[in-house]
Amino acid sequence: MKRLLREVLYVMLAGIVGAGIVHIVIVLLIPAYSERDAWSLLSAAAEPFELVALANTQLPLAGNDANPFLESAVCVLDLSEGVAELRGEGKAPFWSIAVYDRWGQSVFSLTDRTAVGGLPHVAVATPLQILDLRKSMPERLEDAVIVEMEETRGVLVVRAFRPDPSYAPVMRRFFDGLACAPV
Amino acid sequence: MIAAAIRIAAILAIAILGGAASVSLALDSYARGEAGRSGQWVALPHAPGADANPYALALAGRSPSLPLARAEGTVYVANADSRGIALRRDCSYTISGTVPSARFWTLHAGGSGELVPSAGLHSQAVLRGDDDSLVIDVAPHAAPGNWLRLTGEGPLTLVLSLFDTPVSGGAEAADLPGIERQSCDGQ
Image 1 (cartoon, each protein chain N blue to C red):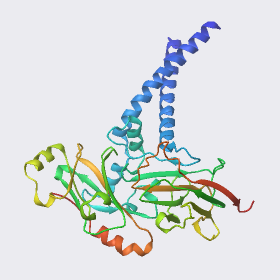
Image 2 (cartoon, helix red, strand yellow; image 1 turned 30 degrees about the vertical axis):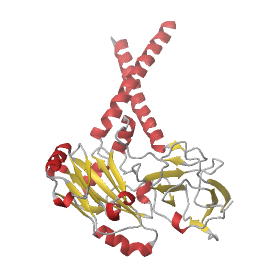
Image 3 (tube, rainbow over the protein chains, first blue to last red; image 1 turned 135 degrees about the vertical axis):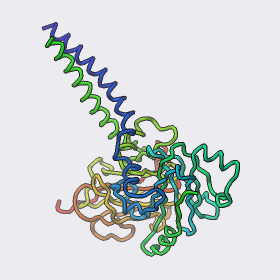
């Protein structure tokens, strides 16, 4: 009886230690093997540098993505094609830009309050590309906010506040005026 | 021989099942967010930043959403009223108090699990009392003053999104409004 108890205790202890190891391994491997993350779903739904309304993608809208006052557009980035540039010509009561890398990590974000002239103009580049930019900055990027991203793959999201349906024309002008392309 | 095999099998079973289950529990609890100091509002996690811990990255890896970055804003959700009773779409509630400082905020109703776009209110279209306090009626029937319309049946999630705000979801968010249940249809 006592021997059985010791056996059971030993198995449980070893199992718990094993569970700890399995736990750590799973947590560390999830990002690499998951196909349900935002980047995987978005890059399957859109070409790199194609601006798509977030509501039109396969992303199950959750949390703030389903906010009736926010309209959002996403642009899948592939920096192997060059430095990514997002620029806009329209205005909105509020807009924000967020850049996520391939793992969903937030690389950079910005709102219209801190933008020059209230217009969005952001360039995303790898560290190597930034060195090149420092040597000679293309004229078109001179007033852009330069964002460094170590990954070559990522997602850029533009969100705008639409106080009510009467702002539909303002939203159209804002989103139609956005361009996301490699430089 | 057989005893050793059984022992190893048992250890592996505990390790694999226990490990997987504990990861699931840990991530679900992380996803539900941290409670702000007042009442039932819980801050949803922001997108993981440069200092992200492995759990935040794992959560980002398995949930297909693009949470707000810290500079964009902070989202609070409530699934229960101030007494801790689950919110329902066929009941009437009164939200009263103050909202933490932000350039603007929105309040909308979602369903259970997936949030379905529904009626909403925002800070630029809301009536306030003399002391800047707020009273919002959340109900299926029309109400005078600030009214958030509820439709359908089932569990209700209230989503309060603050934009361009210094508040990032920690304990300093003491200014969240209370949610009082008034009545429920059919009861």
